Amino acid sequence: MSARRPRPVRKPVARTPVWVAPAAVVAGLALLVAVFLVIRWYVTPLPPTPLPSNATADVVAAITTLPASEFETVGAGRANNLIKPIQGSALTGPNGRPEVFYYGAEFCPYCAAQRWPLIIALSRFGTFSGLQTTTSSSSDAFPNTPTFTFRNATYTSQYIDFRSVETTDRDRNPLQSPSAAEQQLVSQYDPGGTIPFIDVANRYAITGAMYSPDVLAGASWQTVADALKDPNSTRAKAIIGSANLMTAAICKANADQPGTVCSSSAIQSLEKNLK
Amino acid sequence: MPRLRLIAILVSLAGVAVSIYLTVVHYAGFVPACPVSGAISCEAVLSSPYAVIAGTSIPTSVAGIVWFAVSAVLWARPRRSFLLAWSMLGLLTVIYLLFVEIVLVGAICLWCTAAHALVVVLVLIAVGRK
Image 1 (cartoon, helix red, strand yellow):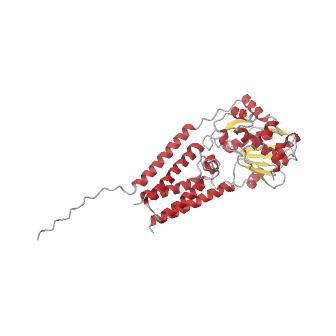
Image 2 (cartoon, one colour):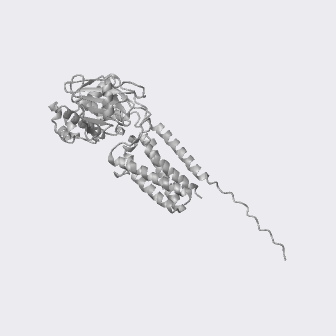
């Protein structure tokens, strides 16, 4: 009887620990996010320098003296109709006229987008002075969107009153505060706190921007003003379309006055879509 | 049923729920409950052209519903090769959507990030599974 030979012992095979593959996935994702952030930082344009007052005046004049045919051709354009009917006691301004109330902030890219059509719409009923150019925050969505600020602006009209509150500057420093009555409007008709918030005489409320701020990305104020002269441009369809919708709301809140603005076929057509 | 499988199925169902919420938000036209602070803005992401599947008006979140639902089914009767392939598809999609959010839109949507995190959890379970 021969002695049993011992069974050969298999050398243990070194296996990759279970955690290696998940850790590699997490590390790879973290690396990609870091790369994306660097790309974002690299491609974000620097904020354009605000225009001097004479150049600002030229741009404001260009966008507030658009021919009536431009408004007629664009109609609602490519604007989102965010105008919602509200029912409150009539909102009148210091001169006893129907009041348009704007509540926003300079850092906010949506406010930046919405100011363009708001200025154009209001300029059909009156005159702005003191508008200054600025851009939205560099560290928010749609950074450095070119726009204007209402912080030092005044508005005169024989038809409507306009009140504005810019709560912060583009760096989020506190700027202006609403009165108690204005805060009440915001709380009542914009409970979600979305800005911009626009109240048209307590007949209509608008929260948010009626077109994407992306439409203005990388453009200068002059470039945008030039684009508005072409009713087929994307910017004209977005901005003038939004202005027409707001004009229709203001007209409805102001008994269709003045007739030169409110009786145009484009505005009359848009008014039919407002409740 | 092994605990990891059960977790994966629950994570998949959570993903279906988040995706359904985002789809409802899209079609209802309201802004999702989401803070707006700095680069965090669901509205910026969900109102961007990338919020819908290219060339359609179908929100991206519908693809999320399909992906998470298929994932739940695959985890109910797991086959390693299918799970890995499906997970990699999900991971590549998440990488693309992160690129869109960070580079193209410049904003982060918290609800979308929640869905992305659920995909990554499922990927980690799939690749870490023996």
